[in-house]
Image (cartoon, rainbow, N blue to C red):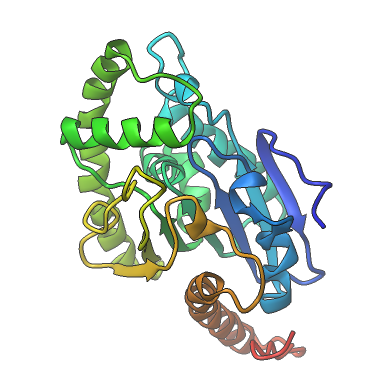
Length: 295
């Protein structure tokens, strides 16, 4: 059903309506891909399901080298911050027209893909500002916010490497991880500040939802626990699946899909209402009524 999509790097538009009111961008985690992370039984839900429920969203998936060795290896110059820069560059390239540059954007990130989103708040201000001002929502699915606790990060990566056997966790990688743990702590502390400053800046608040897994993954247990998947002061939502399954949906009646869809629809309601209010303020003679209850 979605055979035309492949796990490649960069940004890919998978759905483009004639009159989009929002961009929704999907960011996968380690061991995943911009197509495979969101696919089960040939159902690629950003393409096969979501456009029918949110027809006025342009849907984008973004991919990067998700091998753990590439992500963590000291020999590699590509770090979390570099992935964040690539994400910003690619998305700004897609949003460089007058029609799209100010369009609201929502991010949906799985596992460590969420860390790239956190990191993006610390790269070049000009690049960040273009997206930050118009980010309306951030949905984190099984993203670990472990702070600076190296032991907890070590345990997370060991479980993840068992789940996606792309590299063996060795002492060299763990030593590098210890250095990164301070940076991850800073991210965890600065991100809530960014959200608070955003709310008080007149740009409107960015919605945040943290989805956490209910079920253990095979014999590994919970890859990301509820405590690890939370950001203080923001919604924490149970999804009935394991770490891999919380972001794979097979049909419109899938309870996991409904849980995530309900959050996205709530955010879209505000975006549509704001857009309608702006049209009224500028005296737009043609107002297109967007009814979220129709497909």
